Length: 198
Image (spheres, rainbow, N blue to C red):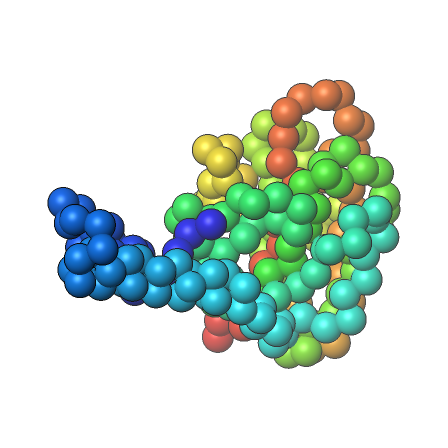
């Protein structure tokens, strides 16, 4: 879990204040107060409600993971998947603030022609980050264009493919790999941003 900067500072202050203090002294108790304050703030932050998606609507998921969902305001430090504790160490600035579908990494070998379906409420740039270690599925290369953007998750590079979607457009995304061959990989990621003006 990655704590926000203010919480991390409180934890650091608390640790510094408790160092070299005699047990029971006022300074020792004050140090523990700051340490516990930082921990509580961090837990409250981590347990806060996710920001709802703004552009993405009507998400339909056809796989076995019950926690796949869409959230808004993707950031560095946000969770990557619905079923893993991985977080984005450094999200490209072009994807910051996007709606994000928390896919299930356990679906990386799951075969389905309609694994994810959703619509967009307004002109949107839909991005799919796909693991470079496996072959691109046909639905991805037919609908999306490759870009120079890369998202790294746990050290693995995922190339970003993009599609300009119009208001009300319905998109259907399929499997991560057409033919599972046991090669290590991560499940693809989905982001939805407002479309830039052309």
